[in-house]
Amino acid sequence: MYIKECIKEIERVGGRQGRLDFLRLDMNENPEGLPKEITEAIKAELTPEFFATYPEPERFLTVLADYLDVKKENLCVTNGSDMAIRYIFEVFGRPGSSVLTVFPSFEMYRINCLIFGFKHKPVAYNPDFTLDFDRVLDAITEEVSIVSVLNPNNPIGTVYTEDQFDRIAKRAAEVGALVIVDEAYHYFYDKTFLRKIFEYDNVILIRTFSKLFSIAALRLGFLVGNERLIHYIWNVRPTFDTNAVALKAGEILLKSQGLCERLIAVEREGRQYLIDSLAAHGYEYFAGNGNYAFIRTRIPVPEVRKRLEARKILIKTYSQEILSGFIRISTGSRPVMEQFTRALYEVDCECE
Image (tube, rainbow, N blue to C red; front, side):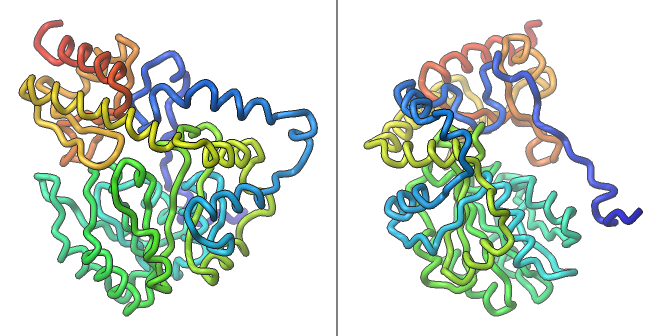
């Protein structure tokens, strides 16, 4: 029986199960979710007839196009941004080529390289969490077919200037590479490269509804690009990729006046409280442009994690050397950040 060679040795780690009983600060979700009136509005649309009908993305795409000030032909809806990445690799990844990312970065870029048999070409951060941009630019060579620009980057949160992005896009065009702009955390950062899809023929943008819009459970993402690139993506997308509940929820969220600004304000207030509290307690931290913060612990990270889990709080830890001394937490409202910091100060000491 034939098995694709590049699939055989992949080791995948599934997401932790049974998380609902915890304060979930480990996966960059909204720890508290949407306002109740929004979830009730979504539930009100879910009739028996609705469930019996195949998904129809046209209404959602019309609302999204208006929201972004683009045409529907510039959009493709996907089953989360994970699937958007996979479609891009399937369509634009040249056999035997490399995919360029920074390191560390969102793990699904490396995983998709393994799935499709591409070479992963990571450019590492410096130990102080800075990135040598010239090394990124120099790494865009003839064997590269896809360049990933996460802005802000997950997990570290660094961003690119407009001049840096333009230099990446132009260099990628010279070698025939596509540039992915991954803006999963765009809403926690004041700038976007969305309009660059109209400036460059080789740029495509990804966003998700899992972070700020707080519907990670429904798996809703989308791609934005010029009509030619988006047409190619639609060609490989299954007829019914995104479920109808996700599409309806996305439509309601985009139509909810002031919701985006309200959610951003709640997260920013909480993040500022966290920053002020950590500084007052003498912690080293990075909490720049996403809904997450890195905190260097005073005792070994595994012990902090174990003690926090005993208090029903989940955090993210890393094996990579650059991050091994830090914990990462999702940022949320001030009450959530107060709950977390109280627990952190109790457990991050030689006290148990």
